[in-house]
Length: 468
Image 1: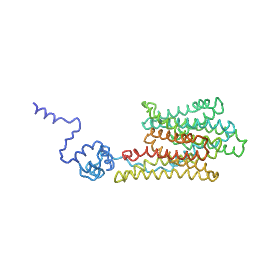
Image 2 (image 1 turned 30 degrees about the vertical axis):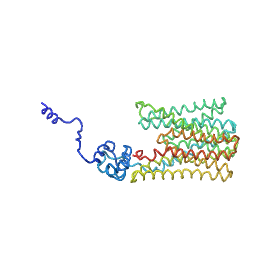
Image 3 (image 1 turned 135 degrees about the horizontal axis):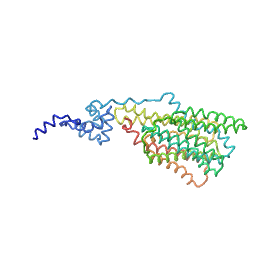
Image 4 (image 1 turned 90 degrees about the vertical axis):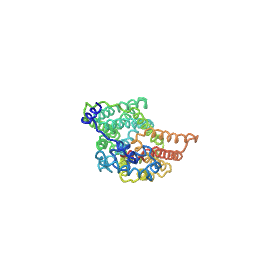
């Protein structure tokens, strides 16, 4: 009876693939069989080396148990025995951006600064102190609000939910001026001028977020161009103040309308629901608040007394698009490096060199932009403030990379430490400090922030598994 059952089973077609065990006395064959499920799509020995290291194989194990000098030599043999990949490897990632994409990213910095063209007219109407306080608070709220919305929208888009991403962006843009009214009423004690100012700023920031999300930066530039021209005319002819204010309001409304138009007809309304990562969104919001506070806390006090020192932040703002562009190029360059590296150590060294060069470039651009400021105002405090923000450009480059790894906890902790360092040192001095002392302490805190970002990035950025 048993023989008949075995014969019937052998004659029946198998319901799943049958893999017969291979008998081998070679420990390397055993290792290959054990690693095969994880490496079925491996296209290079470097991926095998990363998988072996993750599995606990060290250089000593490679020498003692398998007779190879190190893990990479072992990985080359394992890769050879694995045979061809289970399916076609993905196409190589592009190593650069097209000209249009590059220009689009470079525009981000100037687009952030466009509304400042009409600030002199706003100051003349609302008063310097009230306007500075309102703009500072609105800048912090808007930065965090826009960053959180963009993060959530990209999560939805990455999960193939374009309709839900568009709906989130649409209602967030509509809610921005409403939130601005609430913030303006709280900050300005009900002053209608400050309420309109804050509502307009938050509306512009969210409109810019939506237009950048859909790569319509040119629309934003065209919408605000008349306001920029009117703001310059006001500086030459104070009688044009009303025209500058009305043109700015029209530009904000036009940008907001264009942003809402861009969200129409995206995806299908029957997309399944998706639960957003609320913990991650909370960390993104915290990072946005802390990042805005760190950028604004140093310059805001000088807006009332020493505008020349406060303008030391302008080169950084203008170069933020350049920093973002360089950060977006990093992954493609790292993937290309992983394809030519012979050893994991070679890859780590190459990545470190890329980051080092990019830090120098991202710092050099705001330095070059700040030269005119320092020449026009040869004051040591102005020079140190410009230098601090040039270093901060390098720190923001690293922040973009950390954000790509979603290391928002490390970003927040580093920003809190840097803020505490600057404010704590000023407090411990026990007396009002002069602009030069304050800016020198700020420069030290920015250098510390740069170092903390580098330490936070090191564990992740050099692991080749992130670039498969």
